Each structure stands twice: as C-alpha cells, then as structure tokens.
Image 1 (cartoon, rainbow, N blue to C red):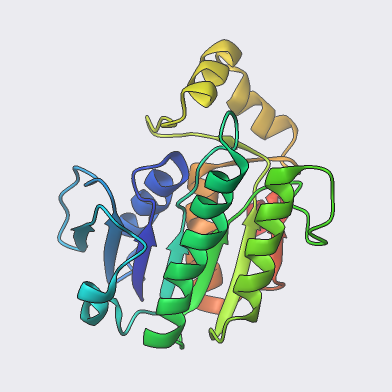
Image 2: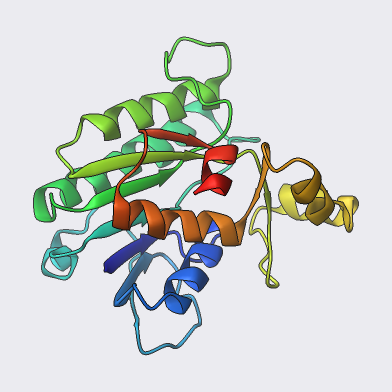
Length: 219
C-alpha cells in the first residue's frame, strides 16, 4: 500500500506516521506539509511546501497512491470564523479535489472530530464547518472516503500536541488519559489506534462513511 499523509507533524499525524512506518503492509509513505517531520526511514519521503493551496508543481509526485490520510487541522479556539473555514474547508477541499483527479482509485480518510454537525445548521461554528467539509469530501469521486471522528485522543509513544491549549490540558490531567482510555474505550482512543485503524480502512474499505471513537477502536 502506498500512502500520502498530510499533517504528519501534528499529534494525530505523528501517530499515523509511526504506524505506517511500522506496518509491513505499507510499502511507502509520502508526507506533504509546511514542516519536515525530522524522521528518517527507508519508506519515508517528504515534500515541504509553504503553500499547500497550490500543489500544481508537484502533481507528478501525487499520482498512483492507494490512500490519503489527511490529518491536517487547526483549532478553532481564538480563530476568526473566516480564517478557520479557509484553513479547514477550503484547504481540505483544495487538496482532496486535486487528489481525486490525480488518484481517483485511492481511499481518502479525513480526521474530523466528535460532535461534527452533518446538517451544517447547528449552533456550533466549528461543527458546521467540519460537517460541510465531510459532506463535500463524501461527494468527491474517490474509490472510498471515510471520516474519522475521534473524541478524546490519548497521545502515546512520546507524541505531543502542537496546540498549546491541548498541551496544557494533557499536563493538567497527568496520568489520567491512559486510564480514561481503558475505562471509556467507547469515547477515548489513542494515536496508535487511529493509525492502525486508518491502515485497516485503507486496505479493506470503510465499514461506513463516518467512524466515531468506538468504531475506530473496534477496527
């Protein structure tokens, strides 16, 4: 399986990259992002771009993949509504639209979030934007598209979030997150479980278009 990964330096992306590099079923991984991962591995190739909205110059590098794991995202906390939509909806669809044209036989997996509003009419801004993004992705002509909606995510293997608020929260919780995962597997997942589930979905196809935390853990 050949995988392209967006957002490999984020908390979820780091976990997904780790599982891809460990899994013998993944033949190669291409990461595309604004920053290098700092990792070196025979299966890994990286493309660093300042402007992810314009990937026309690397179109040849984006052909022939079996799956795209899209882990790129920003927090809506303290962000203007237009900018959040631009970086969430517009950027995701710019990338996905290009990939649907270049590699339509791939499976596209998008990291969304628990509470996403598929109706696009709810009160919560971020949930509406995520819902609109999911709906638009599901309309693209991929072999398959799947939305991952994790709730609380426990970062394993030394992985840390780039978002300051989340780092503060995890520090405050101390040793609780791993215990919460064991106690509430229906609502809590891990970076490791997300990565493994993505590989399974890319290989076998999604059991349904939207997967919540308990679906991810089951897979």
